[in-house]
Image 1 (cartoon, rainbow, N blue to C red):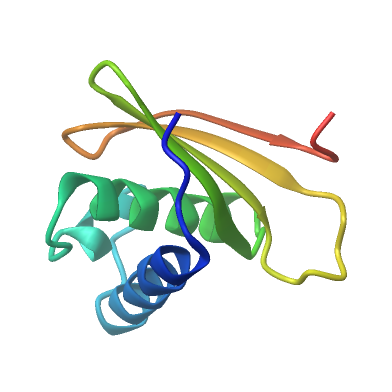
Image 2 (cartoon, one colour):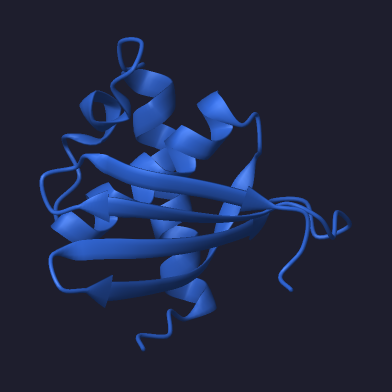
Amino acid sequence: MLQVSPAATLIFLLAACEVSEQVPPPAGSAAAGCASEATDSARAICIALDTLARGERLPARLWRFTMEGDTFRIITVPADPAVIDGMGVVRVSRRGKVLSVVVTDSAS
């Protein structure tokens, strides 16, 4: 399992937020706003955060990131550290397609 450092998390989050604000993707296409990301993993994280923000109205930050075959598994927690509920798991293909989104009220 790949553990992401807090510094890398911050870089991914800043990149995702910057791209989402500059180029809003068309309805139903989170990948459009993240197309300029340099790597597949950065684009997958951008897509996951954008998907949660738009669909679930859940401002999130990266908690864990793993690669499972050709699928990225992005686990998020609420962006606000004071909020304890709202963990998200988003699976994104290498091509940027959201395969699944699961939002729970806790990490259990």
